[in-house]
Amino acid sequence: MRLDGLTDILKLLKTAIKRLKGRGKSSSFRAIAKIILIFKYLLTYYEQRVNTYKKANNYYSKLDNLPAYYAATLLYLMYKYYCDKAWAKKPD
Image (cartoon, rainbow, N blue to C red; front, side, top):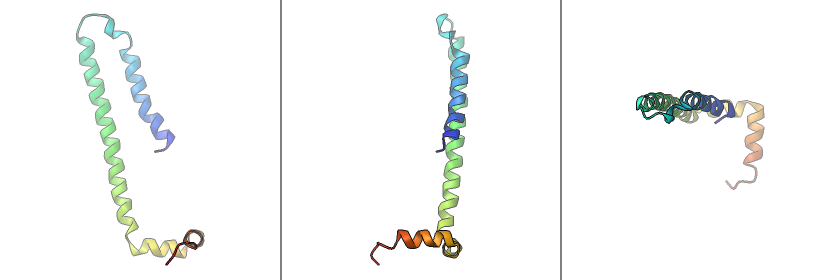
């Protein structure tokens, strides 16, 4: 995961903590209801991010199995050089 994605995720948690700061001092249960709502929102946000990652991973894993992917890799000179260099010491 890129660092930008991690900071975006943590910004939501930081905002939630700032909103709830100091609310636990009273004996009322209003803060608990707000905490539950915020954590439900955070949970759905994180689940959406995970589902998006799974969908992209599924798409790219299918792409790796296509013959066009291998043809493009071999025809693009930089990748061809990399593959030749990386596999030069490997036994057939």
